[in-house]
Image (cartoon, rainbow, N blue to C red; front, side):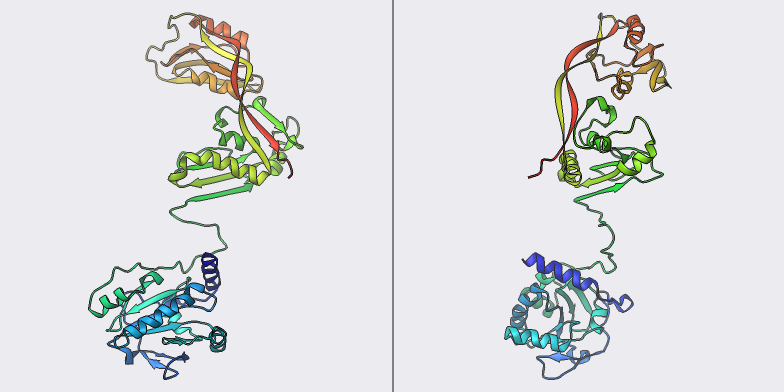
Amino acid sequence: MLLKHTLVCYMLFLSMPQARSQELTPGQDIPLLTIRNLLYSENDSIRVSDLKGKLILFDFWATYCIPCIRNMKKLDSLQEQFAKNLKIIAVTHEDRKRVMDFFKRRKEKHSISIVTNDTVLNALFPHTVVPHYAWIDKQGKLLATTSVESTTASNISKIINGEMPNFVIKNDLLNYDIEKPLESETILLQSAITHYMPGINSMGKIPYNSEVKNRMQAFNSSISLLYALAFDQHNFFSERRLILDVKNPEKYIFPKDGSVDEWRKKYAFCFDLIVDSSNADKLNSIMVSILDQYFSISGSIQWIDTTCYVLKRTSFKEKYKSKGEKPNADFTDESDNYRPKYLRNRPISTLLLPMLTMNKLLYIIDETGIKDNVTIEFSAPLDDIDGLNNDLSKYDLKIVTAKRNVPFIVIKDKVSQ
């Protein structure tokens, strides 16, 4: 409840105009002004110059701020305890009648002076969150602005005795635009989903030039690809390993016929998720939960025993081993097939990763145990297993079919409760 009221105080006060040109900074003198519209005071007004030699504590508050009201009794006690050396003045922008009616309903009267209809002091000490406290020393200089935690008898005693307390300084964001997305240098969790954004290439994971850590990002991706990213399957995603149990499957896969551009405008999305370091290990699961909630579906990764391709060695000879060539690879894209020309001093995964993305091939697993880089010449396209085996036989390598545990992405409509 207290948090709720504090947020209300914050939101309502944001709409108040601020005059930053008049703002005082610590060490500056308060102008020799006259404070008017006083309640619970011997006079309707008081001059700041008459208070020199005393510590002044301005308490900025509002009738809608519960923490402000609760602290007033404490301020009353402090005023009585340090009557000779302290002047506490509560300040509100609200009008006199509203304030008087408020205290009348509560049957309260306070020993601290209360300023109503204020614009001058709010301009000198601008803020967006109440309660807000401005401390003026005996020479009339601003010491600090603080929150409620610093209004203690100990701090007041220190200032009166010429010591500077260890204040918790309060600096409000005066020009913060609540209509804009939340921005901070220390984001704990932030996520966004947008429709298709023309002019941006599809890409995923963490941008290579990004300094933001613990981030998952994708542009103009299908819902299926977003889940592939969340399950770390995006680099070898294939629709053959996608199981859809949904009413409208056309929303999840790129069309085989028709305009891909038109499809993207309707069914492609951009996604961005940032978490703090303490939740870095939960980044993927958080992404899945956000996708599930927003799209009203359920996505999961399931490993299923399935017949697929397996790359094996046919001998212990290392005919594939590179001889220190300059690392290089050449693939030619022909009719949706990759036709490799050669791998030179590159990992064997350079061959297999493109095969994992091909819809004609369900899955391929490397069981060669080869750790060293390889040098292999090819002539067959990647989806021509017989042709590849003819090329690989020269290196005592072979692709066979076998049953293995294969990852599938499963997307289901959520069952209505």
